[in-house]
Amino acid sequence: MVDAFELRTAGQANVKTVTILGATGSVGTSTLDIIRQAPEAFQVVALTAQSNAAKLAELARAYRAKFAVIGDTSRYAELRDLLAGTGIEVAAGPEALVAAAEMPADCVVAAITGAAGLAPTFAAAGKGRRLALANKECLVAAGDVFMSAIRESGTELVPIDSEHSGAFQLLKDNNTRAVERIILTASGGPFRDWDLDRLATATPEAALKHPKWSMGPKISIDSATLMNKGLELIEAYHLFPVEARQIEVVVHPQSIIHCLVMFQDGSMLAQMSCPDMRIPISVGLAWPERLQSPVERVDLVKLQSLTFEAPDLTRFPALTLAREALERGGTAPAILNAANEVAVEGFLARRLSFLDITRTVATCLNRAEQAGMIKLPQTLEDVLEADGAGRQLARDVIGA
Ligand code: NAD
Ligand code: MG
Image 1: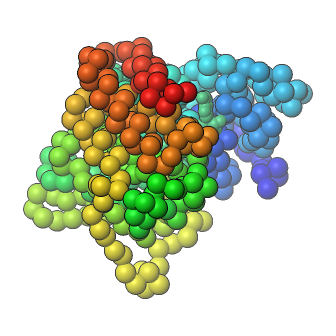
Image 2: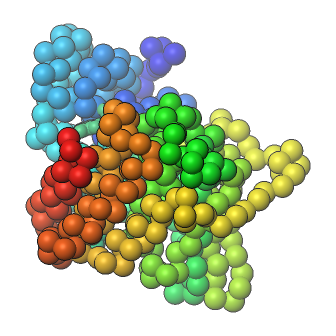
């Protein structure tokens, strides 16, 4: 239990101060688990959540956070009462989330899910320290605008998404100009061997049961449609110095190899580990150091074999859609992402069938193109506007 956790105070050499945006989620709690195992190395500054005040209060107390911020203002009083007398400062609302992201900290872990993470992640990106990035939707929707903000502020960006953490580790000590291909692996999700008829009947419960990873609901559904890998393709394009055509996806059901890099001399390097997010998060927190981690080790003999197959683009067209949106450029990826978020919500609320998720996104992209809505975004506001337009298109398509 985290209650007994005692964090040494700052001021010690080598203590890293950390803020976690989205602390109550899957990535957020995995991050705190790492911090719990290395209390001498980290001090928590701010923790944020959207609506679960009880969990946020419990984590803020256990990890001696200085600030606890809840996105939903109607939960402010609950959070304030739960933390009364602790000395932990409490705030609520979208501006408070941005303020938490801007607080001085050596590392900000950006783990809010979806485009809701855009403003706080941008705020964190403008401060010239380390940003450990889990929120892939930010890179997808805001790509070039986000990367310009990172470069201009001198922020050190370390990806936490496992495939991108793999590529990051593989490329750090290598000549990136000699990269021929980056190969992202996909587990194939829970429906890897389902035919189209069966996919048409897939329920949210079945889609949420990922065979290899334990994750939040939105990314779990994205993994079932393979939109997650489509978003990751766009993410990789912005993170690494390669063209879209140099990024490939291969289905690898064991999820032991997360990424491979092929160099122009034909040499191929792979990053391997058990599918546990605490490994890429540890890299995000400690790089270039390595933390001692309790996670299961890969046992090659027990594994016996690693298998690979090409993704089936007929059953999982989301991958093609994402590639097309990347090639179209401008706000097309922001619209893809926004429409996908609305469609995933519709599926989880049983208003949309599984196959309709990707169909909805395709229809939205077509309508956006026909209406001349795809533009070149210059600022975060432009991206947020495209995100809003993409959401409205999807609501119109779904009839919500
Ligand atoms: P999750 O749903 O488990 O947690 C999301 C967190 O964000 C929670 O703390 C929640 O309170 C907060 N949040 C949700 N909506 C918000 C809003 N509107 N405003 C402010 N805060 C809000 O999600 P997760 O699985 O931890 O994923 C987080 C991010 O990391 C996503 O972008 C996902 O794509 C990425 N990611 C996750 C994994 C994984 O293994 N879970 C792997 C790779 C990348
Ligand atoms: Mg991933």
